[in-house]
Length: 229
Ligand SMILES: [Zn+2]
View (cartoon, rainbow, N blue to C red):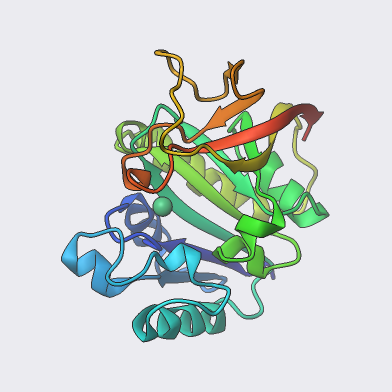
């Protein structure tokens, strides 16, 4: 039996994941984890430290206790799907730390056309970086996440991973993320997500995310690659 871990609310104010875990509750082969209950209760991204930057052993003892509990709950999962919301124009993108066979299976099962591939420097601090293969973060815009279609997409992804027959592949754009875009960099006045930013020589991802304000302006991919996945 394929065991799938669903992680909701690594960021407490991104609650789409809770709709997913509510819909999947009670299935024996699904492990649902509400990652940051104190932040959910406080309706905040995090309590002391950003939990999805604490998986390298840094951060306040509360976040460290959550890291331990989350990884314990996900032990033995074949796949891990970690669900986020974004305030940017990114509608439904995947974030991966590797392109191993199980990660590719999740990509194939999901309709998103864009995949951000995080470098080890970022991935090691995040949940998805803790698994050698088969862990993906999903980013849904708050707007799209409110639609029935968005929930169906995630439920259908889970269902496809549970069924062993080969699924139809499609063209995907992989953005190989290299760095963050510093907060003092001026950007073209347009939607820079997935777009080539000439002055920076790369493609934008999660540009304009409110939660990054004061830290950086989003991510930059040095190159993009078209793959059939
Ligand atoms: Zn998030």
